[in-house]
Image 1 (cartoon, rainbow, N blue to C red):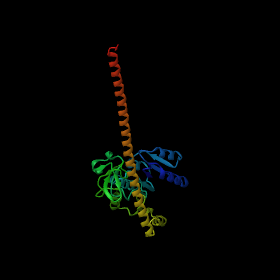
Image 2: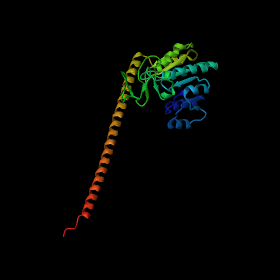
Image 3: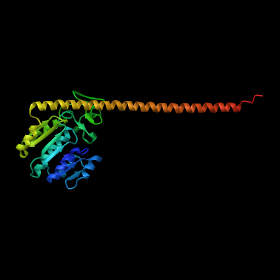
Image 4: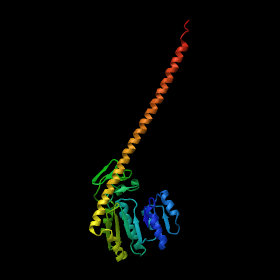
Length: 282
């Protein structure tokens, strides 16, 4: 199951895997982009599309073996998704799923983001603003990264952020499991229930973080990547403001030119009227 397919970049690879192995992918996304529709059009029996929000869609599908959570990036949604996935498997007497969660590192590890904040109850969301983010700063800024999204005004604290939601779930669930965090590309969390663990899976996960120097290098690259994204967002915001200012200035010039033309026409008409009214000079 893939929760949050967006442009279908990951979906394309998952569907290719399903075609090779005879597996089936349940794609969950309530607002599919045209690009996702194009990806799905190349496949048939390999997928089932569920155009619903995750908390409604999860019970509609059979218990999944593997789940990729990349939907609404906030504590309430992630915490609820995990509990629902594990309860759904238990009800069907199936093993709990292997779950991969995107965005368990900065910026949404300890800060909620809401695609549709008003769809959540007042007790399910924090105060938010449509302002951006910058590495090293807990304050929202104008023109930062993801400024077009509803970001929680305060970073940290109870029930705030994707990583916090996962950690709270792990502390509450009785199922034996291990939780791994790969701190690059906004962070990938991997929940491995004991029933899904294998030496081969452990080796794959370990290969991302060993030796320690490799992990430190990746963390440094991730920070540089985030700062570059912020700079691009800020440059885009500055360019947008300048473009808007130029458009407004051009409109003012056009209006002034039209006004001048109108005044010239009025003056010409006044002159013509006066000329007709004056007696002829002999």
